[in-house]
Image (cartoon, rainbow, N blue to C red; front, side):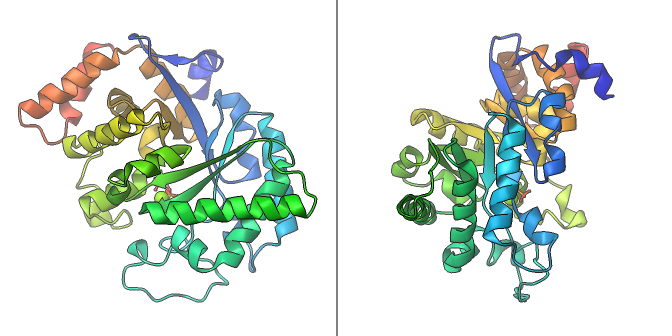
Amino acid sequence: AQKRFAGLVGLPATTQCGRRIALHMNAGLMADLPSLATSGAEGVGLFRTELQFLIRNKVPRRGELASLYARVMDAARGKRVVFRTLDIGSDKVLPYMKPQDEPNPAMGWRAIRVGLDKRGVMRMQLQALIRAAAGRPLTVMFPFVAQFDEFREAREMIEDVMESERKLGHVVPSKLEVGAMLETPSLAFAPDLFFEQTDFISIGGNDLKQFFFAADRENERVRRRYDTLNYSFLSFIRQIVTRCDQFDTPVSFCGEDAGRPLEAVALAAMGVRTLSMRPASIGPVKALLRRLNLDEVAKVIDSAANDGAQSVRGELSTYLASQGY
Ligand code: PEP
Ligand code: MG
């Protein structure tokens, strides 16, 4: 199947209406990096760092992490890699962490909440990232930011670590970009200053969807009940993009839905200009985007909703079929 899209590798995902959609890949292991060249991804839009913590039986050392992150940056050959700090808790449980026995782990002590409460591990990871960059640009994003204060504290922490690394004589990154994952509806309604102070936002659609619909992403019974092409969800995405555009805050979408052709098209029609997905999805998504006019797609979606559709999947499929898809 990959062969079918091989001819598109060097081509941009430019739509018929002239919009350029940036396609990035998600990764979590060194072994994922060769796909950067073969898939034609513009960069790594999400590097999930927790895998390195999950496959060991004790906390990895700073030196080990720094050399792994450096190898990831080397393999990316100057393409941007967005390193997401540790996202543990919820569905990702470390074998060496005391089980928390929480009634609702997805809404519990996880991700940045752990990082801000147990600062040692997050500081160690930030040091490893800064040392790995060694004078190159560095992009870091914090998972599961639910309110501005959490982002502010995390950003202060990274700036503080930068300063102490500088004092220790380490070469600090030439440029530092710090972003937040928008995975809870609350962050979409943060004060304006949040949008001004974050360098970018990445919508974690897997979590955002579970909290938007109050439907556990791990629970088969309810997971499929709410479609990503549900008009309520798409409208919310459109509102987030509008808010980001107001402040020129770059916004991307990195949940699994970005790699599903219909979902990717709908997200692009809602204004999302950067999608990050599994490398194998880049070809099919690009092929489809290149033949479509997003203004028309947006009209199809809005008129389906005006006619009372809750999920616009049927109407969108019919439209895509009329375009030869
Ligand atoms: C998400 O929630 O969409 C996301 C990208 O993060 P994860 O799937 O690792 O929770
Ligand atoms: Mg998530």
